[in-house]
Length: 453
Image 1 (spheres, one colour):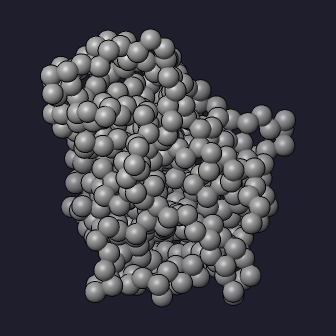
Image 2 (tube, helix red, strand yellow):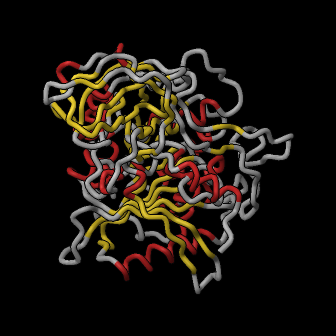
């Protein structure tokens, strides 16, 4: 099969992600087919992390044939061109979670705040792109927008400038010239399989990413989380939805899987799936059929299927809840809207809704939906949160809401609190920054998994 230009970029990138919650952390990946299994490991491996606003290069793993003494490492003995080194330690592998007192890998931590840490690159659209989420809307359902974001392969230039102490008492002399990284360690994202579904019922093809829990066995049924991306991530590069933010990967982190093991399904749509006219493309049926297909392949619990999405993905979740009531046990709806006249079926479902008061469309849109649900007898808890809170503050706010035990919970982020300092409030900033924060709030994921049909 001939690969598209964007699919070629995806293969060339091999860029991956770890996970950020209240602070960036490196995470282990038990399923990963690590590069250390090669006879000769790569000499230098870029490590990336995903943040709410996308992936960033945040580390470099350097391989040495003999174990290095971690106690004697000094960050001043290394340089990485254009980057700030914030820490250094030894590891048993190129996965930073393998940290140890000695190891054949030296992990050089880099500041995620560096100007060139983000890997996403915008492509000039010359006024042709309609994939955004601004005042003009995302485009019509079924239309194929011009992709405005690509992910170039991360490459770092480094040099060992000081003497490196080995665990056996010997040393490695400083390098005389700089070198370039030779690989990328894809934390979490490498645990997703890239596949394609051929839907016989609709005749459509759908690329998707699937995370299968490490301990999967057909002996028992497992929950599944469906995440659907926003219009801005529309692409035919399968991993794009995993690169753009935390919406899919947060459920697949080792920390989350240890507490809430599940399948994670992240379709990659190459067309607009839901629009501001309350229309969806045939990808709604295809996605439902994909879940049914997966349920025939794996033992997936039909009473613990969950859906979530941001912007257009949120709108598709709403449409699915309307057209397939009872298919999902709960929905996490982030920054979406829909025709209130159509939402009656949602009144009997489990919903956690998140929106920013800086969102010119989704905030009034969700207000109208919630008011309509209340007319149909839905029990609703409302709260206003601050987008600048830390994890402990979000937990406290969640606990206060959770004592009400209502099936519908509606959270608005106070005006001005989701937009980063120095960033313009113009356009869709308040919209996009909602999901930058929403998927970092672990209690929301806890709530979702407590819901059963």
